[in-house]
Image (cartoon, rainbow, N blue to C red; front, side, top):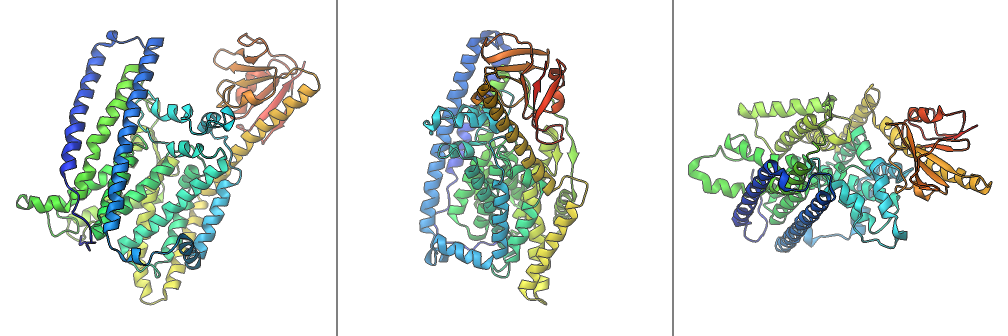
Amino acid sequence: MSKTPLKTAEEPSLKPLAWITGITIPLSLIGLGLWGWMLKNRSSLPAVGTDASRRLLGQYQATAHDIFLILLAITTIALIRLILKSQRNEATAIEKTQESPLQSFLQFAKEQPIALTLFAAYTVAMVQGTTWLYPELVGWYSDVVSDNLLNNFAFHSGFIGETMRRNDFRFFPLAHQDLHVLSWFTAYVKVWMLVSAAELIAIVVLCARFIRRMSSIDSKKGSGILIITALLFMIHPSTAEGFFQLIYCERLLTLIFILYASSYLHYQKTNSTASFYSAFLYGLIGIFLKDIAAILFIIPPVAAMTFNFFGWDEKDGPWHSSDTKNWISNHRLELWLSTLIPIVICIYIFLSLLPSAYMSQGAYSDSSESSFYFDWRFCFLMLLTSGRLIMAGLGRIRLQLIDSLNVASLSYAGALFILVGFKSYSYLSLPVHLITTLNIVWLWSSGLAPQLNRKLPWRVTAALGTTAAAAILITESNTSHPSFRGTVDWIQNRQASWLGAYTKASDLAREIKQSGDQVNIIYNQNSWLSLERHLGKIKYDRLIEYNPNDNTFLIEDGIDSGSSYTPSSGDLVLNIDTPLRSLEPILTHGSFEQLYRHSQNDDSGAIYRLRP
């Protein structure tokens, strides 16, 4: 691929690669040696389940993650300094005509009124009805609002425990840490959702910019690209499930992935040193956001070098041993990105493999049943990728960066299938959905749209593309498969149900207290809520935990705390987030009356009161 070089400093050296591999590979071998020794000498370590084992494991995990975070922070600061230095050295036209943020926004609003309206409406839909009553967020949020909101910048155990204290071979130390940092500044969940909406809008804008650069299309004439991209990416069940909730790391992973791809492409187009370091920085952060995230950031450079080896890419020809020096120079970024492989292996061994092997509790995905559900979009991605690879092998076309991203996304889908199953409509497939959208809009902007522009005004072409995108969405919404609207309704109805039951329980407890009767609340042990997780804020005399496994009742808090309990007349049976059928063993102790029920669904929030 031809590059238009900017006025930059000397190209990044390859010496750091020797340091990276020279440190991570020996450390990985040491870690594997420790793993082998531990498996053979478990009797030399404290027995699992004892206080000594918990102390040892806690100290190890705290120390290992502290070292990891310190090293990552130092590396990030160093890369940011290099990026800023490179940007100062790169004399670009953008720097000479740079507009203020307000001017840029007003210009954007003038050029893209439809897209701006869609973004605003989507943001309102995301924020409306948002609560802290998501499954995992119930636990995380209890830490955020503790200490009367006077300990803002403390490290919350919920966020740390979910990601950095796992012993089931999971590996995502940076997942959810965007929410963790955000919680230091505000406890308002709707503000968190506004930030999530900003992340989604940024992804769409970056996608449109990526497609324009891939297509080399004029920004003005390509104005339809943004609205088409927004419609196809935002109006999809995987996006709804991922962004209308705050509990999934795929939101941040997808944002980092498109930033990585954009920087990678910008470097290929301009030879920008700032983009070089940016791509490596985003790749370095991205590999720690999810167990299999490394696939998205490592496969593209490996695929690019493989394509060049066979002469399938846009460079002059296949690799020759006599031209190794030029090959290395032309793949400087790919070689840098390839060092992410020993980095992620080394960090995984020390942060996940060793503590998980010590606990011997099995992998998180051991009980998962792999299923495979795909829609027409995924079929399109598979057919396009395989077709372009075949045509490149026949010498008909030259492959580009988007082909490397396609290979990475299909590999990611394969890894999902092996671990937990792949479903096109799930939040888990959000990065794959992103790449599929890029391909659809890229084919439109680089193939069909230029042909139409020769005969039609560009505004008419943009309108036709937008209409086609809308037609696709209408067709998808009429299928029997999970839809965008259905997914959004399910999420918001669940939150409304949980909030309604929790609020009603608090109101009923206050009313019963004022009447002079005791308030005894019974809840299912399987609930996400508990004494520490928000139920302790309700005014009761006893909080009773029901164990469905042995059909027993235990007073968790209040009068006679720690004692067993027998349900009696006047007790409140509270269901917030478990199926209503889970209450049947409790309600069989006598007659009862229904005081609240959000809807007729089985998983609806409900409150009952036992009668004599």
